[in-house]
Image (cartoon, rainbow, N blue to C red; front, side, top):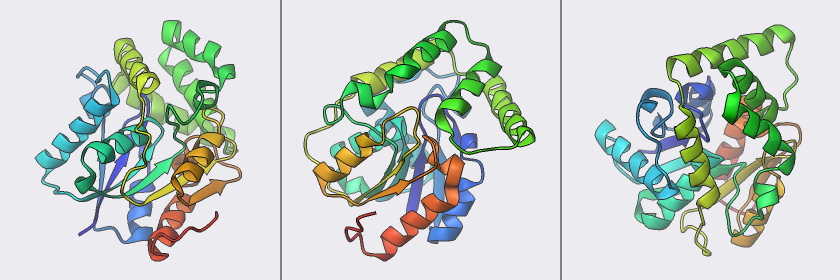
Length: 258
């Protein structure tokens, strides 16, 4: 039985997946699709966020045990979630069967100016210091999505995100802990033992697409590049993500050159 675990990134929670988990399950035929929150986010917003990626990975393992899902797992993870997935695989390789890593970056393999584009530093600092919830969510949408939406669609999406943020607020201290975990994380020099598919967006305004391209080349893994999506690839084109994973699974993990 295949259990797919979906992990999101900085300050995001399971509800930000939207319809993607159902779409993914229908496309891949996965028996179980489980979405988890990191401490400090979503249902776990009252908890303190871990100060390092290894603790995030361990918390995922504990949640799955409590929910009754046994390894091995297949993990699809975005951004900071992908760092946790890589660390999880490094520490407990027997638990990870497949990895799909979306728009991630890893020190020491990627330079800091590609891991977070310097043009974003001022805006990120402003919202951390004094940004309102509505302004913060509007900034996140601008930085993570490249999809053209009508004004009613944009307003509806932002209202939904603002409601999530008010129901399950992420504290400033937890935001800083998550940032610290991402900034301080150093992946192992060797690649994880599980088969890996990289997916990356060429219009990512937050993380340079070169990060995923470099990792795919270093580790000899296939990579799918979306020409128009932004950092939140499942938000901008969840169907494409699901189809890329399905084709990869069907191919037996051969190098596709995508």
